[in-house]
View (cartoon, rainbow, N blue to C red):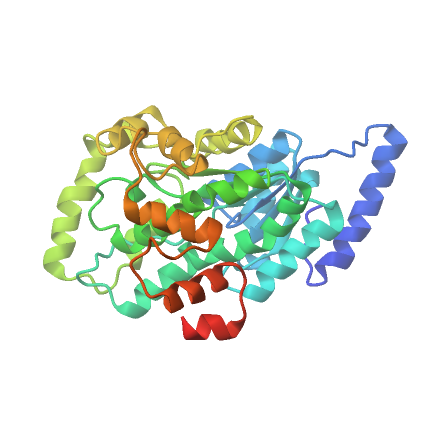
Length: 362
């Protein structure tokens, strides 16, 4: 039931009724059917993951930037025999309206979203030395604000149900040295940092997060056409880029290269993991390279510290400033803090939900 229509909610509800009736007649309907929403599903990792999830029995909602150009997904779904499990959604992640409408459609049809796979992305091999600001803004719009919009749209229902899983498709280049990836990786790294900061909040509400870190996935549009999108690269930098990056593909980086079919299985396995890691390098080669820069490869130590809200080394003794701040927050006593009592009083009032007047004064 791959639906290509503008009035998505009406058509999907019709399909849902027909599918439910057939399932009930066959005695095979289950109330706990798993639902995954995937962005950037027209091709590459998104398409491969949509098919992998569907083959595993999930109900898949595949978001695409242009629903009139999703033939590759439709064709591959037919070949894999999973056409009936994949529903295509108009979902340009740079559009607030389309993201909200797509998520509303899924929730109206299914009642819940178990996994949101934030995959849509745009690559560039431009460096900050020669990237026009408007180009960088465009990449940030897709690679940071895109997942930001989707996260904000799916979180309320997940938090209300006290369950849900966020899969953010980042990149190995967001954690290690990859010259000429700054424009592409900066928004990825920024978003991953935001997710890390949210761990205590999400844990409280039963929502888990995994930042997946693919290496080069050779049979994707990002990998094969990325270099063609770099108009404006200075000739000397372009030559240097080719020397240190593209030539490396046949050398030391070869052990990191993947194919979509193999890579896509990673997301299904991660969704089933009862204790998913925060960072998930996609291959042993990727993990090995990351370990040279960060020994906490899967982020388990960082995540444990974040979840415990432990901001100091074990055994550290609080100094007078931190003791004063603690006294201020818990008891409203400002004597131990080296600020004016009026300033601190305004800050305390704001933190406790004080009036706008207090915040303006602060």
